Length: 270
Image (cartoon, rainbow, N blue to C red):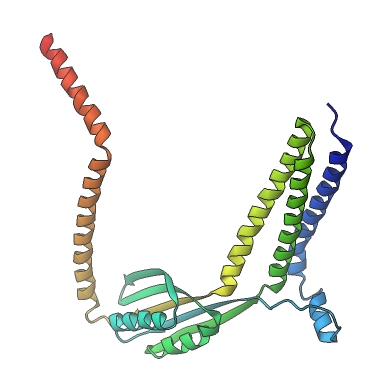
């Protein structure tokens, strides 16, 4: 059964279009690496003041690192969380550890980029001394626009494939269109995931905060008490897990009980 020529020709055109898009996406990494050697045409148009050129909104990922020593670990941690709440930020990770005479906490905080600098200043007000501070800005405008453009092109290809699918006359035509459509949809889903991640990094800055106390007095006692409390909590958690595990495994318990009953009954008859 021959494929309808009205379906075959658009399929070939769309296939070549998809290959061209992939070729452009493969060369985009090189364009990122050689950004200084090859200036952005949009930026040049903005500098030259050419009319009719739309300049994309600048997309920047801001990341900060702050390490500071505090006089009182508990008090500083409490005030830090109050500052996080006041700036409508969010603690996404927290790691407390002690080694030697140092008790520290490493926090990962996400917040609006416009509030990053003022929050850094507020946190520094809690410090006995600031060990290190750094703020990095990465311009990802070109990558953002490139992903947005490629997504738009791929979605147009999907729409065209759906039109061809509706026009298919036989099984071979349907299978051919569906195969190409599935490949393009998978590419779009992957690109959408990249685009969402990039958008999240732009919309929310990341602050890596390390606060620590180096005074040895009281740290050992506090650490011992925390270990006792942690041991009680772990024991209670283990008991709950055992109870929940027993309840969850009730079918196995019933089957095992019936098996034991049957075996004893059979043995008694013998």
